[in-house]
Image 1 (cartoon, rainbow, N blue to C red):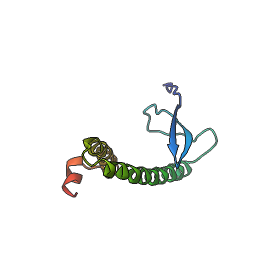
Image 2 (image 1 turned 120 degrees about the vertical axis):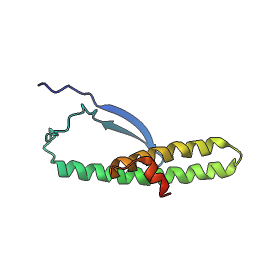
Image 3 (image 1 turned 60 degrees about the vertical axis):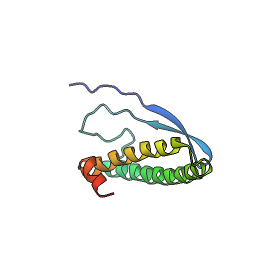
Image 4 (image 1 turned 90 degrees about the vertical axis):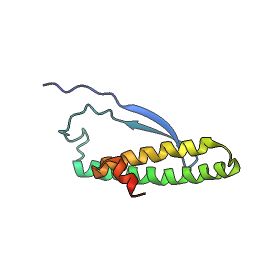
Length: 110
């Protein structure tokens, strides 16, 4: 069986007031990961991804603080509440995937 070739996707974002470019390999859906071309082990890739997640969480905290200031400046704007619904939904999905539980069960704990 031949593995499907995938192309990395490049995204641009702003982080801490500067523009960054992130290239993410597209998954082909296979579970049997092989060492990367540069010889990284699963543990090394895990550690790298964990650092990325920690940075993304910090970035999210910063963006939420800015968003809160904007929402306070315009308290009658329902758009801000809608933004947070989307963020909340995404976080619930992530947590449900990590814990292996249903989103409804997590919502009961909130």
